Image 1 (cartoon, helix red, strand yellow):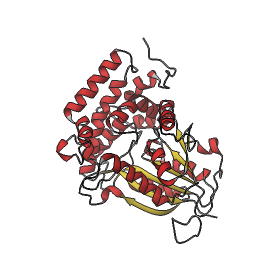
Image 2: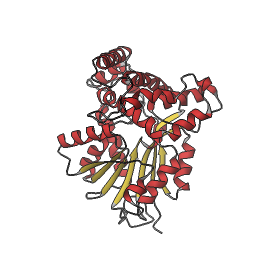
Image 3: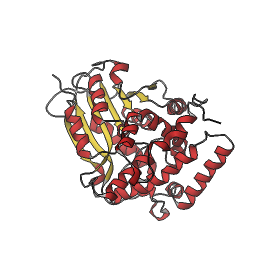
Image 4: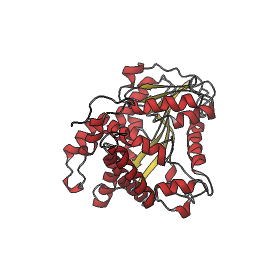
Length: 366
């Protein structure tokens, strides 16, 4: 029986889940340029197939905020995630009453946290119907449906959906001493635009929809300056991150910085937060080492990424798939999460990868 090509009640499409792994050659030696071209050209199918399968596992094993964060010694996992979101909001100068666009909002975890923290109104943009359904349900339960809304859309076509220069920019106090203005509308993206076929494309669309003076803040996934694709082990590491995270192509940090400038943004502030000498590394929850848990409750998190935790999760998925509770092919895609965990941990340990290149950008006022 062929996989369904129409959405189920939750918005998932079985055919794109089953087809996800076909975008990659698992044997890196067999990868050709055409494979990357196919992923880049079919980025919507790559990303949607991935998130149709893994979203429920992300929520179970991680949280409703699908991103990494820095840790203080003794800081709980949930507190760290929230602080990471607060830090972005503070760096962007968010003020009560602002309208904010969350590009690639997942199931709305960061949007809900930032809305509470900064008292702003947020529009969450997502191209995955399944995640939008979940985001709306979570937000209603949190009592924030009047403050946060979610819309389906492609971040490579923002100007078609919203129109160019469609978001006002007013005073910009918190961002730079060069101006006395701060934006009434700003845009942020947390570990989402790495899924775009090109950074110039998605950053360019964000640039278009902002009026002069508008601000864009991003936490970007990048290979660091130490990464050299001509070294086989470096190339293999990037390949593992790609297939395990639904990313068409991993790219170097320098390319992200250049893309920001190429589309016309002023780069107000930038920093690779993963490069700070933190006593607890950002990737520790992936290691599955219970001895590294920062709080009692984080023992559960660490167990879920341990060998026994992964065994339970993946066999549980097999049972759910057999009972037809989840779409066929879900387990196969989620198996790639084991590849992802290993690659991301190694990338963090070797400083070849960062999930938190922070860039605060402004559209020039003239």
